[in-house]
Amino acid sequence: GACLVLPRAGVVALAAAGSLLYAGIVVARTVLPLTALLEPLGETTALEVLTMFLNAGTFLVVALVAGGLAERDRAARHELERHRRDLRDLEAFKAVVLNSVGAGLLVLDPEHRVTALNRAGEAITGWRAADAIGRPARALWGEGVPVAAIEAALAAHPTTPTRCETTLTRPDGTRVPVRLAFSALRAGDGRPLGLVAVCEDLSEIRAMEDRVRQADRLATLGRMAANIAHEIRNPLASLTGAIEALARPAATGEDRERLTQIVGRESERLNRIITNFLEYARPAPLVPETVDVAELVEDVLVLLEHRGLPPGLKLVRELPPALAWRADPQQLRQALWNLCLNAVEAMPGGGELRLAATVEGDVLRLTVSDTGEGIAAADLPHVFEPFFSTKPGGSGLGLALVERIVRDHGGEVALRSLPGAGTTVTLTLPARHG
Image (cartoon, rainbow, N blue to C red; front, side, top):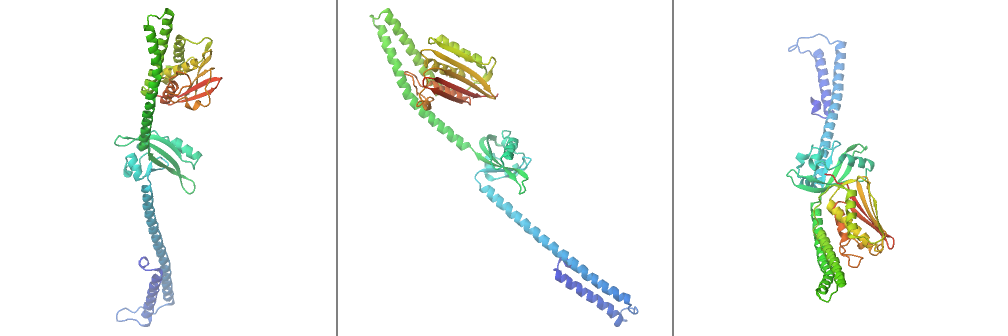
């Protein structure tokens, strides 16, 4: 027991003292027999003397070994306590670092369970760290984050964070748009330990984007109001002049017919300007449904033929017989009508108007091309701006409306044109589900 309290030297000294005391008792029993207290035991034999020395030596050896073991035990205990203190310090340091980061931080183990969540992460996700730790990550951000695909991307490019955006639902039901940046968490020997996700709340960014879009729309509407007044003034002047001429008794039958044509043409122009303006300024919500693309294109071409085509203009269709796609049929028909009308007006002396549809993966491409006059290179960057037109009397809203319709479908518009060689417009529409 002394070895647990005394240092090694003290244990050896105590053992030596005990050995000496033992030897003294043996010697005293022989040389100075205490006959008054003990019964004489006779002379001490050589075997007893040898046993005495063996016992004393064993006592010292045991003391040395036990003292060494006790010293090692104390050193191990001190080392363990030091490691525990270092671990507590490291945990405190980690907590300070995690909570001082402005972005949300989530640490996941290899089974995608949450092992750490900082204060910013608590504020973004609505979860307390104590409640989140140990739960699957999908409990915090739902099923919209492809963690397996992210891990595969990080395995292929370990040093490049993988990002994704999703909308998570907090425990109180509020929805928050977030951006997540994932990095691989690995041990010193390269073993995967899980993932670290940096979570950024995009609510303010989305609100700012909405405000910018609203400001842009108001500014555009202001410019449109000024331009629409200018655009309406010209056909109104023509209408007024034609109607006044028709009211004169001196107007002949031939004059009346010509003036009536002017009234009809300018009325159609006015209607087109106002319709395009209203459709651009107050876009209707998308009502997607399954559309037969070939049938929709054919409807547009039939309307175009009834309107009247220049002599020598040829219509070419390159459409799959059974192509179904989810889109808003009314808005898609309007976009194709505007493109076809522009193409016909670009070929007053005839030419070829070609409409084609192809599917590439989960993307539909609709192409409208003509062999008309083309567009100058200086005008190409402006063709989708409201009220920009290269045609005399054009409203400048046709292509702007096309671009808005396609963008609302989540797609893109590409336009290629060369002066004298015609124009090709390609609408790219992604697949819509649900």
